[in-house]
Length: 552
Ligand code: J2J
Image (tube, rainbow, N blue to C red; front, side, top):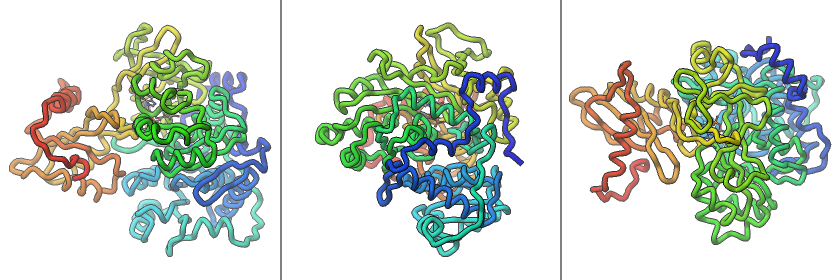
């Protein structure tokens, strides 16, 4: 049985095919464009040509089927930024297994949430992750997912097979070369930044994702000569598809894996491999600008720097060409679909001050007021969109879908934007219950629900607070049970860590108040709470404690 998802209405599907956007090829076709002996991926200890990438992916696909994982089954893949991330991803696609790529920063809480929704038969993870150094989590996962039958740990574990053994052991198999899922069906799941208690899964079909990749390659000028540094988490939609590693593979270029966007390591890799293109989030740009003056010669090969995931200030944008010596491209994208780019031949003013315009002529963007009515160009409204690579619904989430997809199938992004007379968008704010911590998205409700489990806490509201480095950080306003002593931040963070959430979701700051201000419908008034923390941030600091709270 194919994975259920909300399809595009027939007339749209027909139009997207007629226009050549959907070409009914599986994503594995990305690896079929020649370039066999050209290097596809370089990571710390490995290098694969295109032939090798195909060989190892297909080999792993057969190994998975041999172990009883079946076409149409789901999987969780969680690997760090290394070459075998793509081997595992393509192996799943070749075998018709539908994976979700969890971020490496994800922890017990996130993986369980994905597992509960997908009921995967397969897990491919890494011994470098603390969850997989012993069997505790695997047992918990197995209890929540009775279908889980195959666990593969890269780097080995005494409770699972080692990915490297599957890739390199002597092997004979009569398994035929497997088939991907049908091109108009779900190929894999992307992760939503989320605004609700449970992280939502985004079903992406081969057809829609492949189109977004091909179009991105065209717009970003990617060729076989492109050497792309993948410094953001490899499974994220941006470094995967905008044009990301998959775009580079499609064009026959080379992807260099960096463990993180850390400036000194990335600068070394850029120099060593003559990297000419990369993608960053704004806080990483700020760190690169800081490090650049002393290392400018290491960046000589870099031609194009994409920046997206969170708002890039115009001040920072203007510094990029001068101080890093490369061209800037702004990217406003979302794992749900729509991606906007500034174009490579755009005038500087557009590149510095906007987040680009939609990549497809058939991306429909409506900017609407709170009643769903279109606003005039130049006015602020919510960005809503539908198109050939924007989903029509999250996986298995009918109630949420009814809220965020309107009757015309437009996805309501929760981004507040303004469109100029050239059709370029500028992000000015957000109307969704999410914090964008330097590109990492935090669904407020998810963290609030965990804090509410704490016996000393009666009410909680998580809001964004401005931060010079990250753009935004998170602040938890907390109302304690009567008579409870105010807990130290370190105690609350420890408590949350105990709940197994990803580190970036831990509140950066805590405020304790007697009661939460409420809106007229009785919900916590987050606009007021944000104003309260902003006012407090603007007060001159009286205490001179040197330790930032988040490190306590
Ligand atoms: C302001 N906010 C931005 C930008 C994303 C390419 C690039 C990024 C993503 C991504 C992606 C922004 N300025 N330039 O998937 O393919 C915020 C918006 C948006 C949300 C989506 C891609 N670029 N954002 O960031 O699914 O709020 O995708 O709705 O993680 O990030 O987040 P995500």
